[in-house]
Length: 187
Image (cartoon, rainbow, N blue to C red):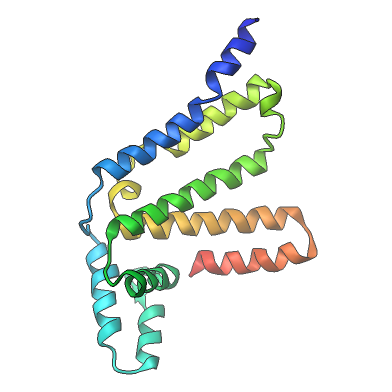
């Protein structure tokens, strides 16, 4: 077996190991404690929403501005989480944000067209390795411990990437979905 084939078979599991290690570290070391904007964006919002006396004021709380952002989609998720579980767990919000990070990763892989990876194409496998290492690193603290920032940022980027991917595909139905995901990215 030549060197390229050996290197190919050695590198096949590496992207999966990187992703598993990323999630392992987050599940092990992240705490269920709000940080920075989590107090206002999650706890204060939830308290205000629950104490609102009319449906219109509840809707207004969902779409109101928080600092420079409008957190409609995250707020709907927070309300769903609260009404399903009866409590707010910041680890669930963080994990949902990390799921969106995985979604961004998969959309990028789909757009790079990795169809020949398993046909011993070492260059594509190396590209897969570097894309994985770039996405699933733990040096950025916002995505690691700050629940609302991770959720808002990753889902905003995820919806933006899906919208761009669908626009690029140029079919009649994909344009409507692209517009829908663009609106979700801005919400």
